[in-house]
Image 1 (cartoon, rainbow, N blue to C red):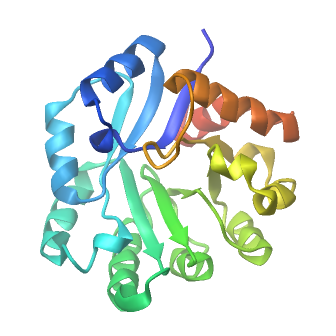
Image 2: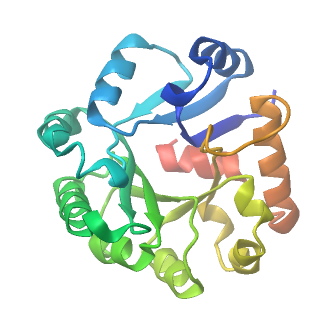
Length: 233
């Protein structure tokens, strides 16, 4: 059986969560299930036990201001988790920019020297700010999810040691494809960001298609090996 994985997936937002879990189990898809709020992580991680699903403690940047009362819960849960996401910055609407930056900065500082943690990071219209906060002396693994920044930001992220998780829409973006050759093959991973991407057919076939499209541009990219290395295996 082909090894499949998904580094950024919203299990709690699926239309039929039970059916999705069955599919993950049957197809043996190693899945990082991100959450948008700490209370959702606490609920999902207790309710669901699966060999193939790992929950990530998250706080979506667009929700930081509205749900700031959950920040203490984030800090309470953080020491016990390995996976962190979805976190980062989103500056499409800059009204909560200061709150987002303050939260993400504190999160990074709390985890900076924890080599066991894996972050999946949102950076829409905020690539440089995310990279400024990360700096170059962090020890956790940083995945830039659905990267849509500039070539200069991409080069900075590569220098910072970031991984990049690629989904279907990214493989249809001329802007991203024009920069894909710059990304080291050893830093490439795959994701669906489901249900925020739309695809025909089954979950496993969609992941296979992303993998195949990516390898058509980067034949040397062994994303499964990269994923195992990310996990420390």
